Image (tube, rainbow, N blue to C red; front, side):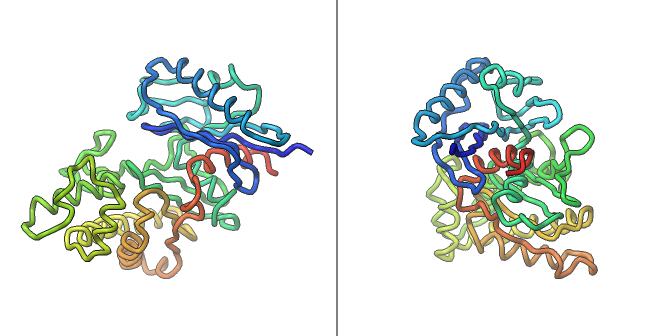
Length: 320
């Protein structure tokens, strides 16, 4: 009897990740390749198809490809398009799903990466029995996928849930879409680094983080510094958690989720981001929400969440 598998495809600004996944979240064969370097989307599509075909040959058992799930920035679930993505080479509106269909005769589903993460939390993570929750992805930027009444909120034109671009300071930092004071400019892996360098410039205290350039500083370095008691690292996590906690308290007001899940590189710093975020979330909740909203790490945080989230699109449509 052949095994049923979905192909998960996560299109990031730097890397595209591809893998074959079953209904239990087992990843059987996977790889990544650079997203950049293909200014013509059809050239990229040919490479993507060849990578999937390569992975097919690595599988040692009979299987049935049930469909392709694609997570991509600015992906429109309704139209199967990628629209004006700031961190991809292809400008304008790209009819991405129709181009994939030229290579594969299976069902194809596409949504933005944060929505895919939310669906992945239902299929593979810790939201299997939840009807109301929010997933916040903390990577290069801040993404959000919102479940309410048991369904993902897409909105009128499939672009709901862009919480990373809510302005928290009209005189503040520019975010990835040029929004002044956009939340992701403060709360994301990149935002944390920006805070580190602001604190370093405003302080004369010793810090092991002074030895890094901006491009060479990574989240693991900041977490390690905090564990060493580094004053700048600890202050940066406190500031980031304060901003995130305050804004999550605002988000609670419009959908009253049972839980908020954090996923992505910044979430992997563990207590350093969770403790201040939890404290400021609870302090800023309206009285009737206090004690009723859980802040949790994603159930996929130690797995290949990007591929699993994309593959979950298939199982979400085709109930296994």
